[in-house]
Image 1 (cartoon, rainbow, N blue to C red):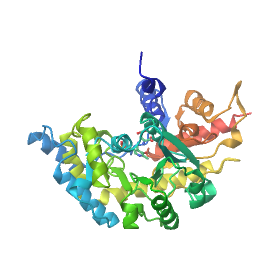
Image 2: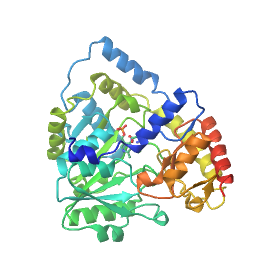
Image 3: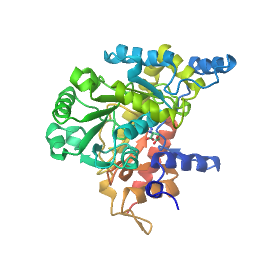
Image 4: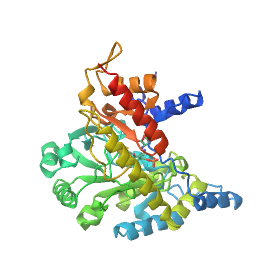
Length: 396
Ligand code: PMP
Ligand code: GLU
């Protein structure tokens, strides 16, 4: 019989929907896909070339389990350049994707009896990853009026003697909300007073719109930095989801524990991908601006079109590449003889009857909402929006 842990675990719903979308497309169906949270842009040429060069130079053997020094130095330089943060080599680890860095971090920190605060809506993998360690995810319901940020008073309501950490993700998946300086300051102080770790998932740092500027909580105060572990990676910034390189920075004791877990499980992240990530972090950065400008156009279009539907509202994301419209107005309506009783049923109707793939809000802890990724072409977005409008029009 499978372990209790394995029996309790279901696959990542975002990855499952992306896989379903790809399988339907392979069958020849014209799917408008809003499922995948991965840039539709190709990895820039100079990054691909660095990987090709690595192969040709036979850089194809084991590297140190926690990553090569050159890449750690590039990560250190990135934190200095972008966040005015100073780290040493033993405070940085290279992992097989941002998800892997988070997984190892949770394994290093959490155990039975611990509580971990997770703001809702959350990225799908946080609660299962916390549960795998035996710790308890504590869901902290945030409010759209507060731009989905955890406020100090809200946070205080959820802290108990067992609270070990809070997970912050900004810009966030799925809403694209960010944290304002005042709130980060207050959260940092509460973390210090209550001896909490801060897990700061900043993987969408570079994908921000309008006037918002990303501030890492670790950079605000040394006392915050001492208890913060930043999880990050190259997947989103450089359109490198398949290369599987993430990184984390934080107190050396924690980074060392993560490295031990890595050395007993995956060993090093792929040597070739590490060389590609090195080129990404140290090479020209202008590609990012081009990508962000395009994402912004798509965001503006989606917000305009979706909110033109009667009763549908949508937070205007300040970062990342998702919109998270509130479809509660249609819950309870019927499509043919099927009642739309949840975001999951609504997602099924959109996929099966309107060939449009989206992710149900409930997977992010919010019923009545849908997540649409706009990391897909404008052509697909326009087609998908027309189909969603048609679907809404056919509800009774
Ligand atoms: N954190 C968040 C919030 C994400 O959306 C993702 C993307 N799936 C990740 C971490 C991990 O990304 P990756 O493993 O591709 O680096
Ligand atoms: N983070 C992306 C998403 O939320 C990729 C899928 C995943 O890793 O869950 O869609």
